[in-house]
Image 1 (cartoon, rainbow over the protein chains, first blue to last red):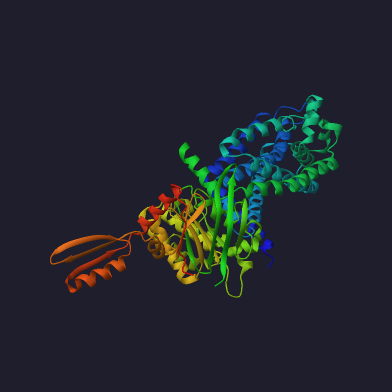
Image 2 (cartoon, rainbow over the protein chains, first blue to last red):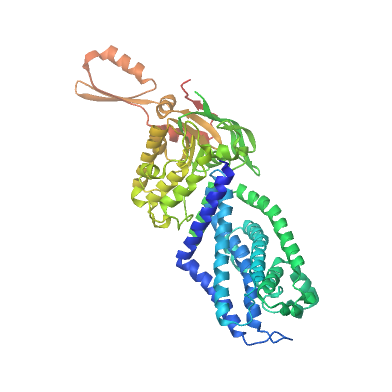
Length: 283
Length: 301
């Protein structure tokens, strides 16, 4: 059988094993719960606040936009962080030492992260459906849009995570940047408040990045159609959403393999040993 | 016999520092070769170049008939690298991890070599059967090292690389490790290249020892050959008429022949002591570090 196909399949089961490990490791589970509950608390807080110019709940809008933000959190931060950590601890070197190991490793990451996103999306939606009003989840079109935005958004985000994860030299140096990067981007991407209330140049900046379009796509899927009035151009702009997310996905899938290859090329037993020694000295 | 590994005039330079100054050697199929040398001699650099994990500055290198810098995945499948685990795969169960990593080798089975190694058989070989369901992070240091070996050989490699395999081991872990390597060479006829700064380990495991100092090979031969070629002075002890004698001889055999010729049957308690490999090694390294242009080659052609 084709070795690359065998490795890809091994990678899929690797991802599933890792996902199950995440669910049975208290620390990982608590981290997921804290993020999910933190956002939920903010939404519940603003449940009875109205979006300016409408009688629609700000909390409900936020809930839907956060589903988009989650793809960014897991696709970029979790992906990047895992890559930094697993380069440091030698997991990546092990993958490099077996035939097609890197392919299997990356396939595993995609499955593991997709699983985590599916889990948080389902949890958030379930709680949202119980506690919030106004979600338009009765139409079949909602689920279709949700599916393609999630999938395309993940394709746009994962390579960004992989590239950033390859560039950071260590987990310690990467830590603070993730938060800064993501909260800054979320602020100008209309996740917590409509982007139309920002200065025009920030609106344009926000629209360059995929996070805005992920949030917009989610809102178009799960909010009543009338809510498009608070968006740029009073439209859900499906075509533009598809276009921008695709552009990021294509650019990322072209760039990421080369960056990953360069990063992996530097890995050897002595580089991992040197990092281990450095870490030992710190503790 | 066929050369599994052929290195000619290998050079490595970092910035302005030469780490390897023209290293040449070959390894035959089934041979266990130890690269022995003090820290900083260039052992790790050499083995990482051969593993395909590091680019060389100059020289010709052939590993299993290919340049390791462009080995490709099929080539990778025929090699095994034993890496020292640290925190990687901490949440995995031992058996689960070995079964997973083995899957990648399945397409590379040949008529003579079935890949991967059967997991239960492999666990048995490295002595981890009782710990098959343990998570990796709950293994003891010695068990973890055995897992490292198992991961390195799960694809039944023709050529296995071991870089400082027992650095930081306690004596028991070291003995366990040596047992596993012996089992591997006896049963699988695997060709092994290992680096170590431990002379005892080199002597125990290797068919042939290369001594590397300052980026140059200063000696090449079996432990016996090295000791003999370095010769130095042997110590001859005997007693005669109840009196004990000690003499340091350059050529012990000639000295003893002469001794018997002169004293005949009155010679008793004869003892000839060769310098130990430890003495040889220390002398060689000292010489090399003092810049003596001394190269010793003791290969039995």
